[in-house]
Length: 260
Image (cartoon, rainbow, N blue to C red):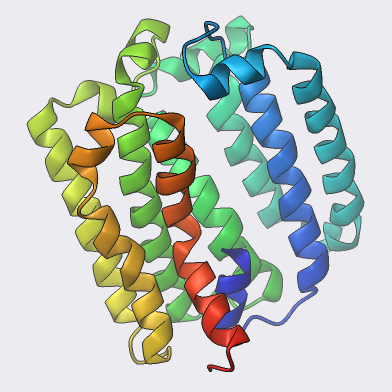
């Protein structure tokens, strides 16, 4: 997704070091989040696997932190926008930290889903533009809007599946607050906005790039009922998560085949 932002927005900066930072920071934050997440053996195949391998999660968190720091050092002159990414990432997992100082975050009405959606969008879209010094381009705004609302729609499906568990933990969000009718309006409204922001990029990007942006939006608009009826880990962590990077994969395939 970061690669696609670079290509679509024609960003010029030290891309390889930034890719390294994003990779290891993601490895660190993902393992940190799931290490703090309580669960029950047999709750799901993936959660059960993680619960039996807590030391591996700590190792992944440690390796990710070391790698992120290593690749961050050459980028320290961009410390302010990068610090924003670190803060947003921490805020998503902070309600799970077993300390009274963080428990109040569970009461934030819109926190969980918006934090997650924005940190994915910020790190893969807005942060590269800020590091490249090209964040003032209107195309950055359109791609950021497209990414945020697509990811938000997908996150709504994840949170709908986890709604009862979140309520039991006291984690509040629009997904735990809304009834099914209003939740559907929020979902399809997000899909519509994702499509709209993609279309606004039309004058600035090749047709195939535009089509690659629209493809996951079109699929997302049709999978709400299916995802609610099929809640296996494979559906959510391969199919739905895969939709976030589908556009980038299509873009990469086109570029590799000699396209623009």
